[in-house]
Image (cartoon, rainbow, N blue to C red; front, side, top):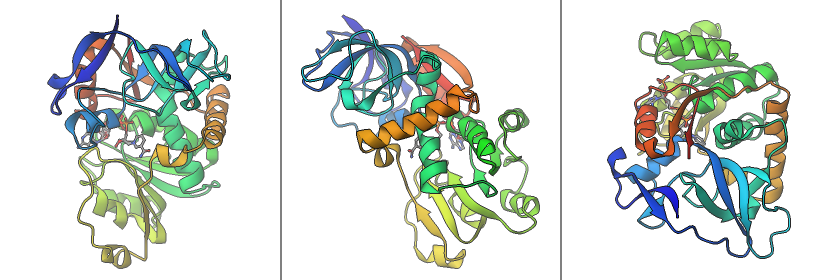
Length: 325
Ligand SMILES: NC(=O)c1ccc[n+]([C@@H]2O[C@H](COP(=O)([O-])OP(=O)(O)OC[C@H]3O[C@@H](n4cnc5c(N)ncnc54)[C@H](OP(=O)(O)O)[C@@H]3O)[C@@H](O)[C@H]2O)c1
């Protein structure tokens, strides 16, 4: 038997249960991974609450983890038992001791990346990779606004932006989070609990405003984010921490300066094996060269996944959070 977290109905963190299950064997093209560390992500909360529907209930949860290959299905030649690996996509169910998923979603870890770092950065780091290098191919010299700059994705973004020579203005909810974002390379921070975000962006940029806004907060920050942009620039709405952006009248993009908007996801960018490998190479280069150091702010036991999610949703975490099976 092996332990996993599952939920039979959507709701608060109390719907998460730790159960014993008979481990599934990997089918053709699949591998089974013995997780040594599991990544906690906001998307896990969207599935638990039902904002994103799980394919079936009861359902496992989580899509990010790292460990060793424990069993290999028919037709898998690129991975073998004992390989150190990580993943950030695939079926729900990473909150578990053992997880079966398609081999094409799994990558071998370079020696210099340990499993905890991998579990804390595969999903978040690949997200930063596509946001900074593909959604808006930044060259250096740009000014961007990044919400939740002291969070898991945000902490990696601050470092990656600095390495690219991009001036990242990060929003945060406390002076401690501001310090953390600055220590990670944010060019400036705005504490939105006591400062006007649009006015501060105007001051910091001498009225020029931002080339790109990266907004994962969603509903609460949509209009503020549009007001922080230069004419004809890009709004990247990539998350719903405060709830989804709904009911948008496209005319607002005209009124705010002929703006562009995109709503991207990791699965939309890492949609082929080749693209996943290219993105992983970029991420592992950043980790291996220490340009990005992953800050694991919290570690929880797998059994405490609900407590971990409450901390994440309650804005009590900084950096990445991992679950330990
Ligand atoms: N589209 C994609 O491909 C993709 C991939 C990965 C993550 N994401 C998104 O990126 C965001 C960050 O993910 P993460 O796992 O690294 O989380 P996180 O940033 O560590 O945590 C979320 C942070 O958002 C801020 N926040 C603002 N309003 C909030 C609210 N009403 N409720 C909760 N938090 C609020 C809080 O920071 P302050 O206290 O500083 O406000 C909080 O710490 C999430 O929205 C996630 O869905 C998207």
